[in-house]
Length: 134
Image 1: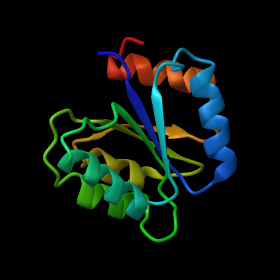
Image 2 (image 1 turned 180 degrees about the vertical axis):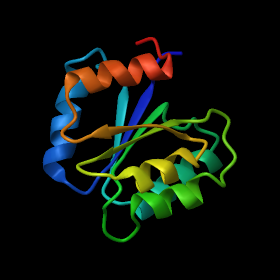
Image 3 (image 1 turned 30 degrees about the horizontal axis):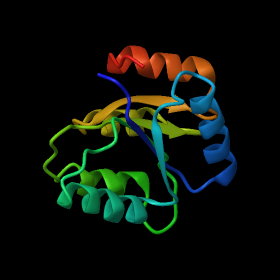
Image 4 (image 1 turned 90 degrees about the vertical axis):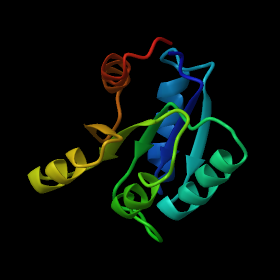
């Protein structure tokens, strides 16, 4: 599978900027990058994509701590949607504990946890875990 779209859901503009730079410098140049500042905005826009018959992003990089709708609330609602292609969600956070890891593993879409700041090795790990060919 080729990465067509990567979705970043994060309210920190510095993290978003850094992630976009990493994506553009690590073989993701051909990928579309969608950015949403909170779970509510992401849920609304991704639901609209589904309703219009478009594909979901291949990879979602999801922050947990955001205003309006946090990452957990987003996952609770997002997992109830019916997908043509199931995105692989990677939770990207500056801190998480064992209870959050256990909770994250209860979501079928969550592939793994990545510590902020995202670095090039993390992207390579994401590719390996996703079995995604870029």
